[in-house]
Image 1 (cartoon, rainbow, N blue to C red):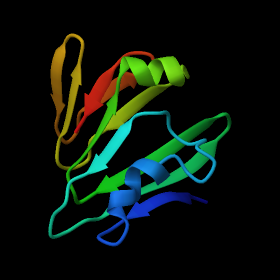
Image 2 (cartoon, helix red, strand yellow; image 1 turned 135 degrees about the vertical axis):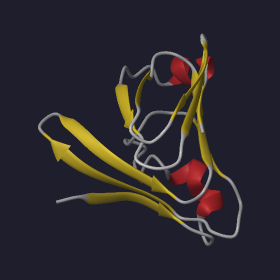
Image 3 (cartoon, rainbow, N blue to C red; image 1 turned 90 degrees about the horizontal axis):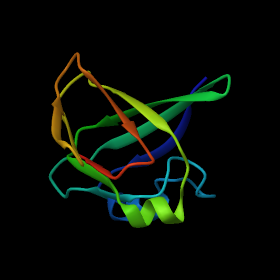
Length: 119
């Protein structure tokens, strides 16, 4: 059974930075999360726990970004590896070594212990 972590639309997308980590700030890791304004705003994350791991399905019909900086690392030094599987659209990741763009069928790995930006 899956659990909805968050669902953002036109009514609440401006609150995404303060609520994407859940009511107790226990989900994800610290970073700057934003959703671009537009005609269609639909961003949803659902989680399923499998043993000691979580599988999170993030679906978005809206452009969004997440940035994890050195200051976020100092404040929240959790070490998590995330596998991003792209089904539709594209995922652009900027990091210390440059930029990577993943297209449908690709996957990318990010680590929470290094700064990066995802769009």
